Length: 284
View 1 (cartoon, rainbow, N blue to C red):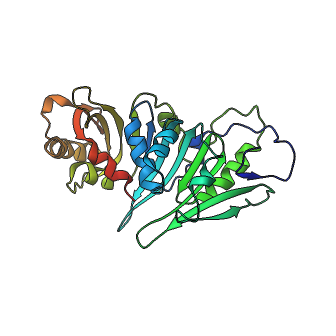
View 2 (view 1 turned 180 degrees about the vertical axis):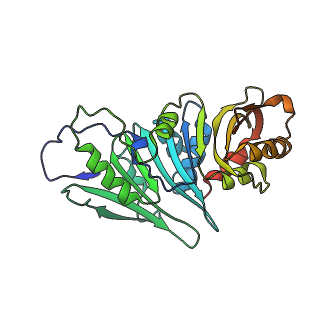
């Protein structure tokens, strides 16, 4: 039996497979999926940011077992508010040995409503930092905002019929399918795109956008750089025409790299972005 469960029975019942994307809520400003195959170094930096007690060797070992990191992020007044679900072969038996009181972690129990199953909750806090973390299965880790709610949702979904293969998500299905399809590239979508653009460009652009989405891939010629393809969805044609000029200037692009589609969509391809800009999204 997996060590983070206290189930009070001798055998573990067969459970429906819960997908990581099913645990994210719809309260974030933007969402991002980072497969380890797309950038294992970025995944390791994210893990180290939120589990500072990890040694470099442990962080590397854990990251080698991670498939994909899914995050929902919002830009609050003084910090990044985030919710994160990690899929992979999580070494749950090892985590209690790392997330110890000596390393600043407190352990408590979560018992979801209408459930008899207990889950370990690990918490750490100081003047500038607070995080919750839990491991509902050997394939999933959850951390950040609303961990008890994510655990409750996991508990509910895991008890659905085992032949229920449909994605059961809180976020919109089109968004879930888009993020869930990430394989060798980083995928993101911002339905509240203002803070996302500010971080990427360093400029406050009032563009009347409904959505920004796109993909990142590592630049084969420059290891510390990404190449971005972005899709901007505007509220109407008037804002699109003005926004095209501002975005071209903000990203330092020529007109040949941007394409208008219909009356409300702009695509900009081949944007070069320093990796440190993306890392800023995940800093506590």
